[in-house]
Image (cartoon, rainbow, N blue to C red):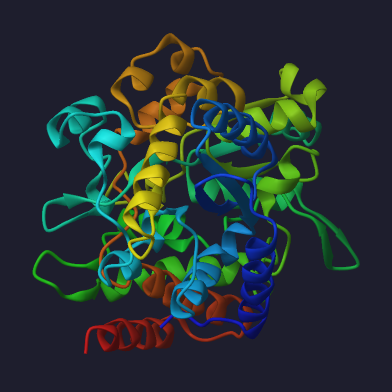
Length: 421
């Protein structure tokens, strides 16, 4: 089970009190919970205001939470018999809610479609995989994301490195060594760091590059000890007990790339819009670029980072009228896919978006689209969130505690097997 912190229950209690005290004067009230994103907050608050004008009987309250805590908060709310009417989560965090009947089936008419076929024909082929159960769709995509390698060209050139030189993980380590800054052995500026704790998105693809996987086709768990051990050894050598190039304990690399405090990070196309807002001069310069997701020198599979989706979903416990209104709001958001792409760089997996000039004209869009051709979806099956947490425990044990990789792999296999018992 995902651990739920006590403070989440306290926060939930406060939310329930606030939401019961300040409702707008409308016959239908929708609570919409989402992860923090200042750029998306701006566009969605505008769209919500327009939606309320077009639907005067519906009011919407939008609440934001830290992305790493949103699933815990939603789980706590559902356990308390409360929760949002509309919410969004990434594909790897959905299965626990989906398999426990917490998410309502989609209402095609409410989101603006006549049938499932019409909806599926409008989106890319894999857009609904993570929210389809027993043939029924339970979510509408907010975004489709893949991470590539953002590089600060100016910082590379300052230390005499070719900014296009990073093709392998070994290249990246060598570059990070030169780009890192230490004060008496203490790392004060990193050359690169990973996107902890999203291990299904970046680390499992690294394992796949070496011939491993979480599951085999016939259900074996933690496929190829050697692949997992070598990938964990790489992380151990990366961390503070090895070359001391990075750590899960540091601030997210993506958040400081726009301030030029780190030379490389993994992020999606949306990073460009955030860069433009937070550091317009840097964004408008030629001091940055985007490269494909690196591979190991001895890789047996050319695997990019995993593709993942975020979905709008509706609480199955909300009354039918509220559910229908919530789906209508989700459909209203999706009908403005071009605005999401243009203003904040979020790519909804609509066929018209993927074929649009607006997408192709985004800087380095070709790199992201090319990496999608060599990617797989992040694991979204049963216990996906728990498995991500267990992989994180294995990685952090070798990086921070010095656990031998072979022991971490044994513990990981045992823990994943125990989930289905």
